[in-house]
Every structure is written in C-alpha cells, then in structure tokens.
Length: 114
Image (cartoon, rainbow, N blue to C red; front, top):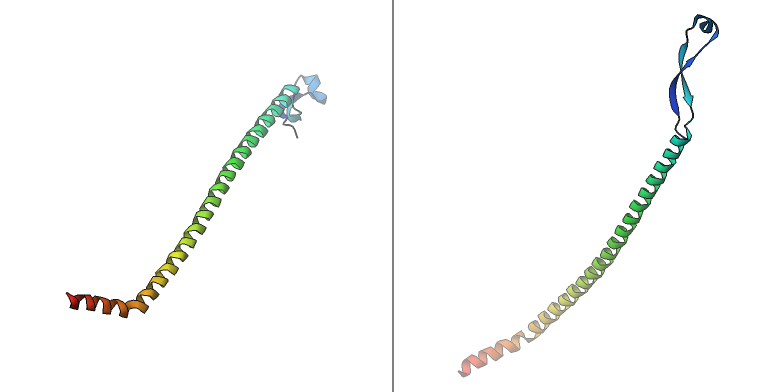
C-alpha cells in the first residue's frame, strides 16, 4: 500500500459555518503523484541494492566453496600420507625386529675382528 498523508484538515460543520468557526479533524489523504513516484524510486533503489548484495554474497559463497574443496583435497592427501608413513614405519619396525639378531651378530663379529 502506498504511503499517504495524515493531515489536519479544517472542516466546516453545521452551525459552525454560521458562527464562522471550524473544527480540525485528522484525515488520511492518499499520496500525491510526486510522493508515489518517490516511493517507487526508493523501492527500485532498495531492490537494486538487495540484488547487488545477493550477487556479492553468491560470489563469496562460491569462493568459499572452492576453498573448502581445496582444503578437503589437502586433508585427504595428508591422511593418505600419514597412513603410508605409518605403514612404512611398521614395515621398518618388522625388518629391524626380524634382523636384529643378524645385525647384532654382524656388529659383534666386526668388533671382534678389529
């Protein structure tokens, strides 16, 4: 609904006309054409502002989505490397355990021969 005016309007009634007096009454008057055009212009301005804000937000959301995907890929890569390193350490531990006797005897022999 368009914004109108509440204005004090002098209304002449009955015996007041004869006495030359009037009573004031608040009356709602619809907006003038100029006011109506101003309201429409403000609505257009607000609409375009909202559209610009929406556009900026969509752009920011898309940028954040790209960053999130990159982070997800990085985290996945890091998890895979950690698993690989863990398996490598486990395998090295097995090699050391199974060959510890051989290594000790090798070192003992090398010390005895010197």
